[in-house]
View 1: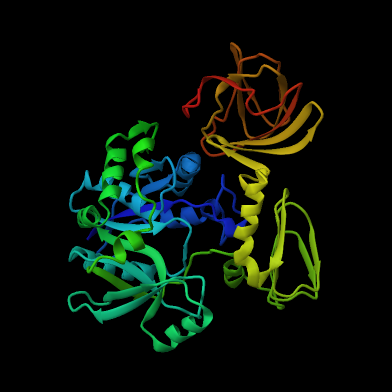
View 2: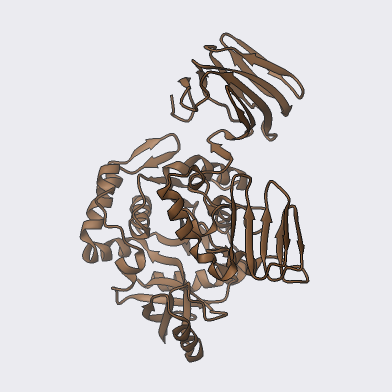
Length: 476
């Protein structure tokens, strides 16, 4: 059985601010373990054992994260079939439909394995067994979701009620109904009754049948997404959906657009160690706790504190007498809240957006296609940055009208272009880039990052003081 993995990478993870930002959301963070959630999702598409065969994964994502996701795939050594760029977020149904249209053009018999990029699955073998059951259900024309075995009466998840077992697919059931996020009493009653699962947001679809069903159920959506895909343009290694056409697609989740309306919905109940890591409560539940029930990350000293999540990224965080609290420090922001109200951080982010705070968009570390930079010190007419260039990457050939730059190599090997000269610098060597000089910084090493300290001086230091002449990332 061959499945086509389709990975959705949208959303900003606002309930995990300030760790998660619009420019660098939770799926790109190593929240559990030393690899990002996106990397873990990609690695679940490696060729499994048994009867399953996976095609290379297709990812649907926003334009702002395209190079970051491509780098995640490169580091995981998993070639992507396609990275499809949404011009704007229109919820999961249009995103899945865009991926399905692209895959069906290659294989009209394709079966899709739809995953989101920000979930954790601890039991890979149990997941693959569930995928095989869901794939067999999809091969009979059913639209199948995964129902997670509930461990507690959680009020933050939607629920699925299963119906009769499918005679022809062991482990799969007819899907009786979806239930919205319940109150505590309703959640407790559903767990006592049995036959209910958490809604995972993962699916297995026969692609052509799903498209045909949506043509009947949501014809305007199919018309808009077909037009956006037909007018899509290749940009480097990406496929850009047409913005005008895609904007006309109704913004709907796949649950509402398809699963709640079809009579062919099925569910595979499973216990796979799943979490959507949707809040700090989730991170606390999954984290390694000390003898007082605290999850402590980074330079943290806690005294007389219990059942709390305390994280320090840049500075010492010292806490006394906290009980079921979260404290998260990221260098440019500190978030403090009762653990039981961690879901309300999204409300806090909405207030920050109203105030046009930059901290909503990004942290001190700003990611670029070639790597990242972090502003260390900013003063009157000067700025100091820490810059890391990914192996094999290079910045654009550019010049500045208002600032000069001093570069000091910390580690790695820098190839420096200044007008018509090219030089190689290693650790502790430096160079000077005068105002108006055409220049480029490159890391030609295949595996070692290049790190430099950059000191800017001038009457204007804004990021828009860049005139590009050549750029491999299409920004010239």
